[in-house]
Structures are given as C-alpha cells and as structure tokens.
Length: 398
Image (cartoon, rainbow, N blue to C red; front, top):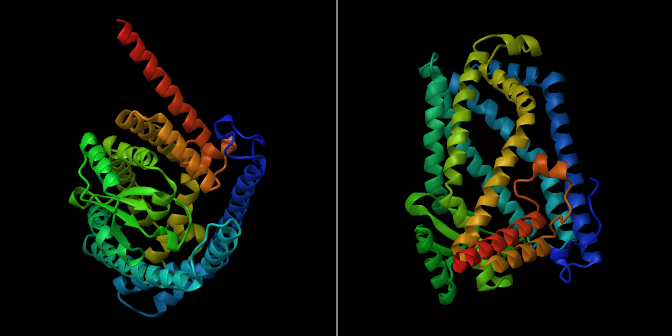
C-alpha cells in the first residue's frame, strides 16, 4: 500500500517526530500487505475448493455416509468451519508473534495463544452446533417457510448471546475486576447518570496479558450493561482522557447506534434468507457449478460464494455509516463533558501508542475505515468546540 503524506500533521507536532511517523507508516503498510496476502490465500482456497472439484468430492463423501439430514448438515458445515480455523493458524501466529512482536505490541505467550485457540474451537463448535441443529430442524419441519423460522431463531439466539456473553464467554478469556480508583469511579458514575445510562458494573480487563493496545467499551444489553476499561488504558491516560473516551462510547448508546445497526442487519438478514430460500429451491446453482449429489448444504456454500461477490460493492456503504456514527459519538462526547482537549489528547495518545496511520489514502478510508482518520476527528472536535464557543458568545452579548 502506498501511504499518503510524509509530514507530521500539525496536531501531532512535538508528540510525533519523523522517525516515529515512519514507524507508524511501516506498521500500517506491513499490516496491510499481510492482510492482502491472507485475503488472497483465502480467496484462492475458496476458488480451488469450488472450481477444482473439491466441493463435489466433499459433498459426495458426506452423502455417501447415509446420515440423517440434520446430522449430515451438521457434519458438513462443522468440518468446513474447522478447516478454515486450521488454515488460519499460520496467519494468526505470524500476525501475533512476528508483526505485533516487531512493533512492540505483543505480550502473549505461545501457551496463552494455544489456550485461546482451543477455547475458541470448543466455543465455536458448541455455538455452531446449536445454530446448525436448530436451523436444519426448522428446514425439515417447515420446507415451505423455513427462511422465516430460521430468521426468527437467529434473531432470538443473537439477543440471548448478548445477555450471556459478558458472563459466560468473555470471562473464559480475560479476568474482569472492579475499578479500584474511587475518584475515577465517581466521575464515571456521574457521567453515566448525566447521560441517563445505567451500567451495572465498571470493570478493568487484563488486556495487557495479550497486547499493549488500548481500548474501552460497553458490553451487554439491558441489566447486563457494563463498562470495561483496558488496564493499558488506565495506565496510560489521565482521568479526563478516560472520561472523554467513555463519553464517546456512551455516545453510541445515546444515539442508539447498536440498535440501529441491529435493526438494519435484521432487515438485511430477513431479505437475504428469503432470497436464499428462492434460489436453493431450484437446481440453478448445482447446474451452474456442476455439483453431483444435489444437497442443500452444497447449495448454501455456492450461494455464500456468489453472495460475497455480489455484496462486495456494498461494503463502502457500511463503512460510511460506521464513520458517521463515530462522528456523532465524538459530538456527544463533547456535549457530555464540554472538554474537547481531553478527547483530543486521548486520540493523540491512542494514535501514538497504537502506531495509527496519520495519512491514510482517501480511497482506502472510503473502502475500509470504520472510523474517520484521527486527524479529521481532531479537527472536527476543535471546529465544533470553536463554533459552540462563538454561539455562547453571541448569546451572552444578547
């Protein structure tokens, strides 16, 4: 990837020098090159699997086992899922122990990586088994309307997992402890009350066991909502900066970004499942790709491949709305705290510590960035603060 810009932005003057800027750009370039190689590898594997005859062989083998419809489908997709996980192992290891090590971020041991990998395999197998068994049963139970029942089940399952994940899954990977700083806790409670949001707990996560990257987030829904702060964030930022970052996250809740995203996703899923139902009813895909043994499982694989190509041009639309949500959250952060400079300072620290790209190419931003570039965010915050100050001045004059 060709990086745009070679000068330190004015917003980072005195904080980032030319050597650090080059390191930031090198980190971004290396991640992008590696991501491209990983993506190409995955695409090549998919093409070989589908067009090289492997799908046909695999599908015929599953059919030859003479298992029930549900067991056959469960085995078909579970083995494919495991194949994808194991093919990703070399990329995960290189990303963690080469790239992240090289730039000073990785703190994970191989033992911990292996433990995470095994836990992920078990959890994904359990969840996939539940979804597959229920979905395939609904298909056999209601052949004419399964798309509607499957959509309803997946919706309920996702809501249940939002409730369970903070208590069942997340603690399997990280240790969560209450934030001990009483002053910080008091300011966080004051902030959430001002925003009209009740978080059941304010927790610290031991993220430094795996990485030096920093972050903060909300998790759970309803009464399970809680604020989670990375221990790396607590160590590197001041109270004002932490509050500003949390105000940004609260902004997402106040603007109902999670709800809006969920509604949009469910509408899209509803339409997609109906279209999938219509397509798999015919032999179009099997004939087009010359698949022997006309099974529903093979049709779903082919449909997923075709859908991935068709939907690719829609990705910039998703990233556009994501960046828009981030701007709204930045605005609400300012409205809740009235402290632009703490948020600016937090963004500068986050960018410096995470070696963020300060000069991303506009086209790359349009296609892939879920957040506006950090320099744009800083300028937006300061412009908003200036306008608010001017408006206050006019009102005071009157």
